[in-house]
Image (cartoon, rainbow, N blue to C red; front, side, top):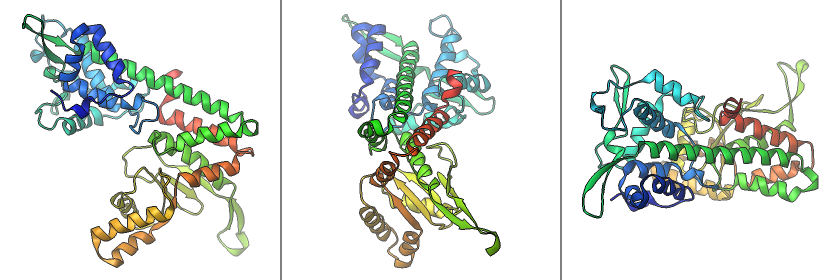
Length: 383
């Protein structure tokens, strides 16, 4: 029996069980409760639920999808062929296929090579097997067949083995369809909000509040934060030049430096011409803050935090954690001095409300749409 917490139901769990019932009838619940790979998928589909804190990424889903799809396409569902004799799927074929799937055009090789297996082991540390078997020398891949087969006993006690491969494909297809529908609704709402402006300011504010809520999707939070801050700073200017005779007025421009949640060690936003750094985070964890500070050699950073806690509360928590870790005042002060500013959710809402009755609203919503399409590879998928 799988750990109960792994099988905790969320809004998409019902769809998983419905697919299993369609495939296996009365054995569906038994299969759901006794399959580690279904338990893993139950966790990984939580972000289909609106407002979930889980990130709606697709890399690990698709790594599993393409290796199982290869298993099916090569004819291993039946008993005629022995999968242990298969020479394995080519990496180039799997990689190309995952990029053909919805939202998958920018996916890298990490999930196929290690991240799916590493994450699976976190949830099933004593199982001893992982979903993908990989031969580094030949760049060939196999699905761990034991994970996609489950034993079922009938009323007479006779055991049979059921193959979950088609069900897994259906579950991931349904998850992607649900995410795509949700994303398209989000884009449609953004476009409608852009046209509301002063005619219905309450609806506009409510929509942005939902995107900036601490329980919102982390990637959407970063995108909306960027759009609001970019517009806010664009209305501010400084005087700058190479010499006193060349001083000119310039608007502040905020640039988004990469994709959200890219795990690339980069800084999220950079401001020109001041050279300010901005980092978006979900946590109030001194280790995370200080890691970001260290990677830019204590250069001051503004943190955009997905929380309603005040600046004073956040600063106090970070400082207490820093003291507990280092217990050296000079080190603690050095890190704290590198926090240039902390922008929380109330700050973002205040900035947005200041701009709601101006032309800024449409620019903010347009920016959210553009960045969202880039983030989710949307334009490539619908073209």
